[in-house]
Amino acid sequence: MLVFASKLDSENQDLLRVIAGVRGVSVHRYRFAEPWAYDLDALRSVKNQYDAAGWMQLVNKHDRNGVPGVTDLWILWQKEAISNVAILIARSTSVDFVEVSGSISPLDLSHLAGHFGIPKIEGGVRVPAQHR
Image (cartoon, rainbow, N blue to C red; front, side, top):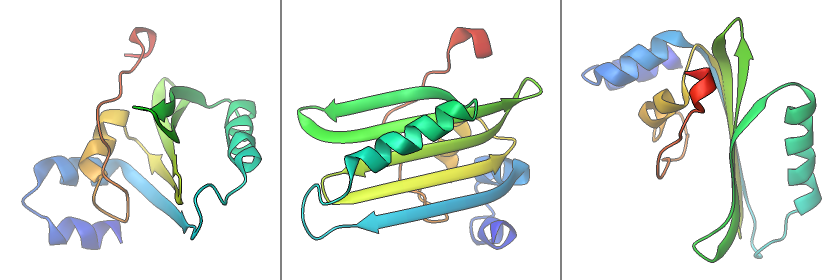
């Protein structure tokens, strides 16, 4: 799928560079007819599982601009490099969960946004200075 996608947008050099380091992309999208119909404890459980597995949480944003919701971003470091990135975005009637495995940085995710079912990412992600 990654090779096919790179051929569809072969002029986008940033996308081609990012795809070269990606081993896999997993996208799960859940839609709900009623606002807040999903279990918030299940979202907390996801966070706890990533924390327990040694992932570093870079973004933990809730209640954006007065609108309830969750945006979480985790990275997994292996051998002084980022090996996986996971994003959880929960709004009133939707939950999107994306995990990208391979050599990738949070900045690279912006080049994948809009491809492979990955939602567009608004704003930037600041990597802590100790991990640059």
